[in-house]
Length: 472
Ligand code: ARG
Image (cartoon, rainbow, N blue to C red; front, side):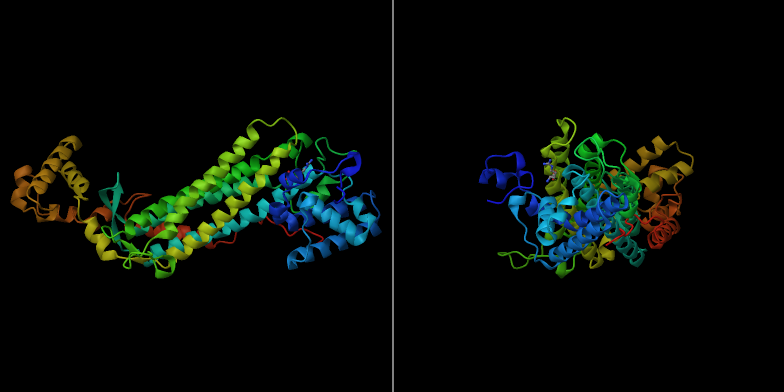
C-alpha cells in the first residue's frame, strides 16, 4: 500500500473499496495542463514573496514542466491511490526532485486548487465552443447567401402559413447562436476570477500576492470571499445552462432537417458522408446525425439538473460532493463540441431542393393573408377582409383549386372591388417582398441582415479572454 500524502494522522490504511470509490484521477486528469499552469504561477509567487527560495522555486518549476511533458507524451504514471490529479502531480514532483517538491503546496489547499483548475479549463473550453459557434454561423451565412433567392413555406403549428425566404429561416438560427455567444461571453466574465489564496476555506496566514497569480494566469480579478470561492460552482451551472440552450437550438434545427429530408417534404438532402444506412432496408438513407444531436440534448440538460441538485443542500464551504461537478461538465463540453462540429459539416454538405420548396410555398393558401391585406387596402375592415378571404379559401377547397386558378369573375363574386391586380398580390414572391420592414422577409432586408451578420462574424474579436499564462 502506498502512503497517502495526508496519511499522518491515520493508523490504518484506506480500504480498497474506498480508494476506488473516492478516486477521481481517471477523469480529472483532464485538468492536468491547467493544474501545472496554476502550480507554476503559485510557485513563482511564493518565491517572489520570499516564502520559498528562488532556487527551490526553479527546481519545482523545472519539475512541473517535466511532468507536463510526461503527461503530454503519455508516460505519466497516473495512480488511483493518490486520488486525484492534484495529488498525483504533487507525488510525482516529489519523486522526481525530492522533498523540496513538498514546498509547492505551501499556502494552498486542494480546495482552492481544484477551483482554480476548473476555472482555467472552462475558460479555455468556452473559447473553443465560441469558435465552433462562429464557424457554424459562418456556414449558415454562406448557405443563406448561396440560396438567397429560394422561397420556402413558413410554418406555424407545422401547417403551411406564409412564404418566407429560405435565407431568412437560416438567419433565424444565426440570431439564436448569436445570443448563445453573448451568454457564453457573459458567463466567461464570472469564470475569469482567480480563487487561489482561499486555502481550504479561510484563506492563508502567509503573505501571498493573489494579484500576481491572477495576472500571471490572465484572470481579470481575484475572488473576494474565501468561503464562497471554494464552494462556488455557479459558473459551471451558468455554463451548463448556456450549453443546454445551444443544444436546444441545435436540436430544433435537427428536428427540421429530419422533417425536411423525409420523402413527403423533400426540401433538402443531407450529404452521403453525414448519413447512415439501414441494416435491413437497402433503400434507406437515414438522418442519424441530426437524430443523435437531438438525442444528446437531453443528456446535456441532465448534466445541468445534476449539478443544480448536487449543490442545493451543501453547507459552506467545501464538501466532497463537489467532486461530482467534473464528469457532467466534461461530458457536456464533449457533447457540445462534438455536436457543433458535426452539425457544421452536415450543413455545408446540404443540398437544397429549391423547386420543391417553392412549389410547396405556393400551396396551402400561403398567400391568403396577402389577399386579406389587399381587401383592407380596398377599404374593408380587417375582420371583414378575413371573413371574405376565408370564404374564398373554402370555395377553393371545395372545388379542389388553388388561389391563383380562381378567375377574376369568381373573385368578384366574393367582393366587387377585387381587380386584376389581385393576382400579383397572391404570388408568393410578391408576398415575401411586401414585408419590407426591419426583421421582415423582403429580399433587401434579408440581404442587409446577411451582410451585418457576416461583418460581425469576420470582425476580429475585441477582448482576448485567454491570455497566455506567463512562466510556461
Ligand atoms: N478531487 C477533489 C475535487 O474534485 C479535490 C479537492 C479535494 N479536497 C478535499 N479536501 N478532499 O473536489
